[in-house]
Amino acid sequence: MRIDKNQINTINNRALPDHRESFEYLSNKLSTKGLDTSLLIKKIQDFQIAIPSWALGTGGTRFGRFPGGGEPRSLEEKIDDVGLIHALNAGSGAISLHIPWDIPGDIDAVKAHATSHNLLFDAVNSNTFQDQPDQEHSYKFGSLCHADAKVRQQAVDHNLEVIKYGDQLGSKALTVWLADGSSFPGQMNFRKALQNTLDSLKAIYQGLPSDWKMFVEYKPYEPNFYHTVIQDWGTSHLLASQLGEKAFTLVDLGHHLPNTNIEQIVATLMMQGKLGGFHFNDSKFGDDDLTVGAMKPYQLFLIFNELVEGMEDKTSKNPSPAWMIDASHNLKDPIEDLLQSVEAIQLAYAQALTVDRVALENARAENDAVLAQEILQNSFRTDLRPLIAEARLQAEAAIYPVEVYRDLAVRKTLIKERGAKSLATGL
Image (tube, rainbow, N blue to C red; front, side, top):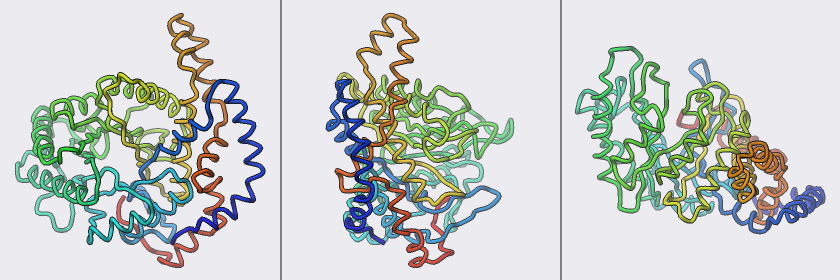
């Protein structure tokens, strides 16, 4: 299914008077603070967030899965769904594939299909946390860390295969997330497991094209509960530093223990030039994979406050990070959730762009904690949703994407086209 721009325009016209009033008020307010709304809009439009192919179907838990119907049955249909999202919000111009869930058949045809939706291919993701039907060795007790060299080699070969597919599609990065670890004391030798992982990553790193990056992800627990081999950002940074200049740490917002200061981690990695990218989601207890901004919008803003400071620092040696959503839901329509998540990310980014950095640094120099808090919270509490909506409108997308999605009965159409019991590959 494709959404015609005329359909979007028709619904936009109904919302236009109210939007114009809201945007004009906000624009005047921002102008009095010396902020250029046209520049802010351009930055928002340039900020593209990749959609993961596995998030387009209903997620689930170990207790059950409740599909909503009309899920994409193939890679091509997943590209169609990302194309729908991008048509509605003009902010999701890339898709991130997970191999082997989404092995492309005809490479040229898949690339042409993505191009027809104005989509690029973001980082490709390997999968050594599941056993596939045709693989010789099991990953039940680890992959890149495994005590058996044959298992490690199988995992390395898989990652090299993922790089091959990504290179053919035009991707420029590989994301490695490992479920490797142990659930019981004594089960695994910590030092040997980490050394095996480093050696395996080195073998994969050697297979990277010259213009590629490797993102090393981390997670403190789950599916193993006593220890994970790459448990935190420090271990990821250690590995990335030993691998070389093309290796970076990837931050997943759900991959931290409760109350971790993620914004400090972001600042430290950027100072070291080793922040490679983000997996955005939200959580209440752990790796809940909830809609971005649903639980901790202020923390998201504080993270972007550090990101913006780093990205706009002309002396920074950190490359522009890769941005991607990583979520999985059992309750919401996946497309609606992704539309909400993209807007939450754009909103936090825009709020961070409005922070008066000169005033903030002066407050810090004077150790004025009260003023520093006021400066940050003034930006956070300013409703910039009309600015995000205007950025979409100027890009010929929907003023209110979820409203347009529902008015056009997109899910009903997808169910009619694909069936009420179609299931997407992935988690």
